Image 1 (tube, helix red, strand yellow):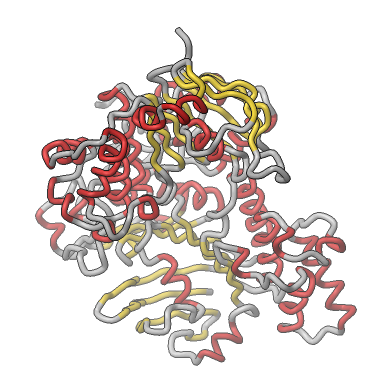
Image 2 (spheres, rainbow over the protein chains, first blue to last red):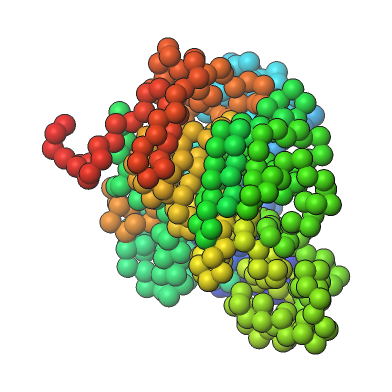
Length: 261
Length: 331
């Protein structure tokens, strides 16, 4: 079966005279898979997912979604494309309008993309899917904690039943105890809804826990990709090797810790 | 060398920090670890008088036998930079964007010594070499924006150690850096602290970072030290339920052998989130979120002291067996 997302020879720069941010990338994403994109700041990982998700125009090369070029989707059926491709960002506070009640924020994608009004019942079911009660609907963003707001942002992205959920550093702004809740939620939603999940993270531990496929980026190039287990077990690039070493130097070995209960 | 006793920090009606005791001896490195709102930064900044102006401090902080609580701003300013160096999370904000690197480090050198200009310049190059900045002569002429994040943090460290402080307070010094750069900075800090027998108070939200760099750790929750002692012991065999939960919530690590088994398995979570300052429960401040809380947890928990300075305040601690029979067949 053809991959859901296919990228051939993709290059990108922000403006004609700027440096290339992405250089001739090739990758594919299978339907239902979970792919982690790791790399350091400036490696181009956020730019890549914004291109895949249709938030930046494809410059040179091609990106296809479900066998059709994303540029074609966006010029002819932009709403259809966005119904299939949704994204959550690092800072939930910045991605929700502070003056809108949660009801209106979460209803926005359905209103804009499906051109229909979403009822409270449906909104409540999305909120309950992410572990929030119906009382959340009448509140404003400032009345929530960071972890709760990220749940709201996830509910909003899910409200159009997307095929692919892109998450750019979804837990970097959260405390460790809350990060675990949001990561579990994403894993749970993936299983329940059959989502294809693409997670950008600087944290190798997060990706190795969540994603069976991994892309390692550096300086706008994919230096290594493949099944997470293989890539981390026997990295073929010196860079991946350095990255895993640096990450394990500051990691906690779960084997050393007893979980009483 | 540094002793904190019965320290409280209040802002308005809220008690942000309440620490009964915490000690740091010469050349040792102590980690203050906790989530946002745990009071770790407030505690560290109170030592050198960098807490917010409206904060009220009571109790005692002694440094080399001298009481720091109650000193005037100028007295504290004299201690900062000479006896106690401070570095922050964001090096870009700690540096003057319009001043060349060499001149900025030179200011720190001049402030704490009466060297002549040529000697100052030599000392600047010497400091830059110590923090392992490449080609110090060329780099000294650059501006902060021309350096990478890791290089900037090295500049800040050079300035902080210019006066050979006995104590370095580092507040999340690697949080803004990439993981490969982080490792280099941590190695450098450990090396400098060994070379100069410089004690270090290391504030971090990351238990992994703290275990790598510190000898001892104090785990803070809601402004209280819930558990403290040798870092490796506490992280490998936590007794307090909060420490245990915090470790369990960690996504694990890129240990090649563990990846396959851990992939897709849910993490242990801590329900809820850190409450607002006025919403902590009575008694143990963690009890609302704790999976092991008992009725007695509504009362102030007792301090349990173990060997090696390990102590914790929990009514219902873990019963991690001591001596290594962790995965024994007993159960």
